[in-house]
Length: 230
Image (cartoon, rainbow, N blue to C red; front, top):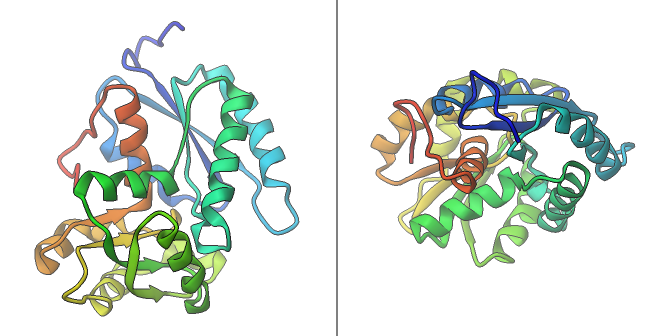
């Protein structure tokens, strides 16, 4: 497909829930030269048929002629969340005709790249949701050693203070942990990663950056910017 003058390396479609204003801010500094991120928003909630919604929005997004589409959503905090994420991924690919990626699989892609199987996990969800997250990670061969559900409240996730996010990471430090993982793409965790990795001495994987990296790699591209970590 023809590429726009200002995006010779391609267009990446990014699907985010209506209330998520975090993902776009986190991936823009990671965008390599010659790439445009085409952001599209979808309805998400208990009364929404998410797969049908994603099919409709991905179909409209196809007019931007993306080379790939990233779904920035974190259902792994819910029972059978990984299966749900992969069903959404298939729905997006079928509707758009281009490869789709998810922040969920992006996390596992990063863990495999780092050869990590034991993690500490934070999420904006209530602590009781972390058991479902641990089960989902275990199904992929990853042990959640410690976990912190920050219980940010759905409407307040994007406004979570960076100090609170940093403290959540510190609270789950454990000698058996090989890496720290943040799930929940609305939580603005990427901003604290540089300093915390130096303090904790182990990699930190954030869901938005992980999904974006995997999407770029599928196109033969690398993260841009000076904060392209871990």
